Length: 407
Image (cartoon, rainbow, N blue to C red; front, side, top):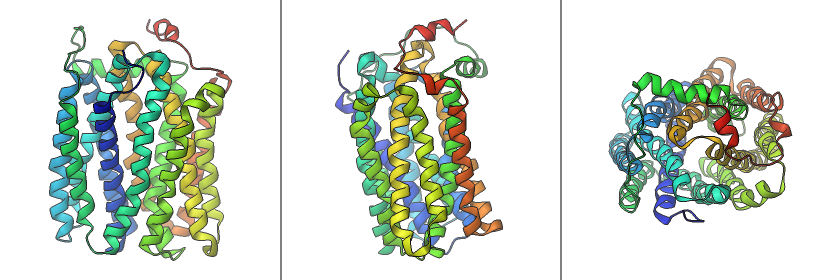
């Protein structure tokens, strides 16, 4: 096994995550600029993220059964097809159900690719180097996340919103090229359980594991909160803080600054700080950022919005690198795909729930009141970790606990 992440794996993972972020930023800004209601903005965000809820679990089963490279190819094709259709729809001014459907198809690609990479990485990288390898993946994603809102804001402001989705289609083609350089070996043969039983086996492992269970609960709360925030924040920034699209995009790019800072320092901080502290800091920093924005007057809107996005990037990426490396270390190889799918569903499957909740809250309660919804949800996410044994975890565990929890 290599001490560092292979270039092709890094390229496929970064391209897929960049496309996912760019599509999200493009859709929310384009819909808001077109005069869409908060409910419609929430619907588009929900459609873009519903793939994580509906596709993750079955894709996780196949990730344990077939060559992960094959799934990366499928993911690239889905990215290209959905993004090309979305480009045509957005170019003709169609902001509705058809755009939501094409977005769901395109977003299914990064779901499949992310699961495949999670399974491949422990096969290609030594366990001791997993935090560094995951940090490199997140650093690549972070750098492009810094650019995504700037690109989306420029495209919307200049009336070429469809350009963002066209670039997502190009990124799908890059994934296909990178997939050709990945190993094509199938995983070791294992009993073929029915799909529902195979999914349940991965979920049961997470549910009884003392580390993975609180991580899943925290992830559910955080993702509901973050996507409720995303559904609300663009209309809130435009109509309450009176910020222009370019200014909103610039402030949102601070999310990428936080991601880059967290990814650069992640491996060193994981080696030097207690693991439990990092797992608490991630959701707690998001709570602080959302609360500051809800309390900020309009005159401080731009700097506080940028600071909040920076916190959303820095703290959670440390949490993500930490918990990803932890679950790769404690999960048996034969369960990697299904355990990852279970955690992925917990982390991302709640996105449409949060987006719809945020959109409806913005419409029914008004944006000034609805902005407090993600604040409360981030607090619950933090409590999920604080109420467990995780705060006392001093260092990254080895694989022994994985074996002891299988029976």
